[in-house]
Length: 612
Image (cartoon, rainbow, N blue to C red):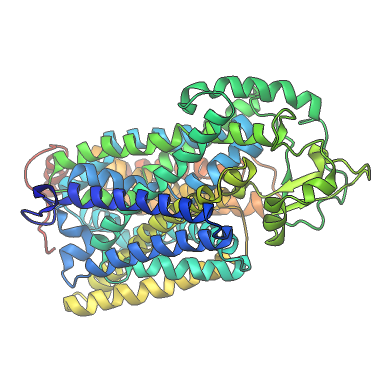
């Protein structure tokens, strides 16, 4: 029984605690499977999965409550590298990664692999250029680094502005994802589902700040990775491709390429007005593995660049490395983050491929294309997703058979609907819903905390009221969490763009304003305050202007740089402005240059004190 006995402090017992948690979650899955066999309804199973996991996260959040500054802002800087890697992976793998990425590949084909390549490659930049050095600096927030490195309140304030714009755009996408899941699991309209999602997010982060978010995110990673892998392995094995889908789905891609010309994918377009009654839904019109050349290749490369530079600029990711015990731990933690993230990213293309085959392949019992529309409409999963407005069928040619250009779907539902499409037990659907919710909640927690911390620490404490007591600062942070979360839910309910679109905008905003001030702040001693201010202000302004002109004012994109890639414009302007203005103005003082030299030594004590 010594295995069950806890010895030492909480940190020492983390492997046992999360081992028990994982075992308990697997027992819960098995219990739901048994209850399904005994006749428990599918909707009830879905609700139990969502309710059980949110209850666990809320319990962790309550147990991690704190009124200590270090614990609230940086989890006491005592998170071990492996667990910080899991928390970072959960923080990173948002609703976009879990819910929307495979859906994007399903609907858009090869071009959407740019998200996978860019998001993974971005972690190389984080490891090489950012994480260890920001940890060495010892700051609480990203604007804290900018404000201290360059000096003065203007630079700090501009960093806060960029952070808020990028993180708020990102958080609306996560609340959008929670609303999508809640609306299906609970059978409520999307506009109501976003508020259910917000309540779940807030109860995890309100009381314990970074400490609560960290331990909640570790628990959420375990749920989401189990939920993502199980249905793909099941489908791959069921379709006869084996139990390691990541290595064998090439044969499934070849089968799809055989079917596409037979079913008219890429040639049959929706007839005019066919999708009028289905706002936000699209038909499958893109080939699955058509890489393209010329402008298509250029757009692929520029989207990869935006995702990479955006990854290395996002404050809620960078602040995770402030929580490790040492600089070396931060570096090791990046490697663990990449490992845990790759588990999911390596699987997403396989999931999109096997799901598409389930829908298209006439030799599979689950296929619907080419079947009688009356039979397709009688399927339970078609009825339930159609009832919440995320799927629609229009027999445009009146032949009674479902064509590829008559089936409309929101790409964001592909992962969530996969178990039902593939005819898997409903317990798997409940598991996937819980996983999607965990992914969206974990990222939303991190984003809301990043915004609230920047406003409470950098704006309120550092600029407005430097004499504010600890209790007052933490109360301000929690009130801000509530207000920002409510604003995010309100914006998400407007459905201004899809999940992937909003996430791409967030990356573009972050790289436009923050990438070069952060990188050059570490690697170029000559970078000074006027240069950083010019880089942030002009980069953000140029990127925002370009987004408005291309997306809303009808301007023709420059050489294929559309609204998903406006960070290319913003970051280019930011780099030029920062270098030119820095060289035209006085160099930083000797003390600042010595501090930059010290940052680049990846060992030793932090630069700034723990209570700066």
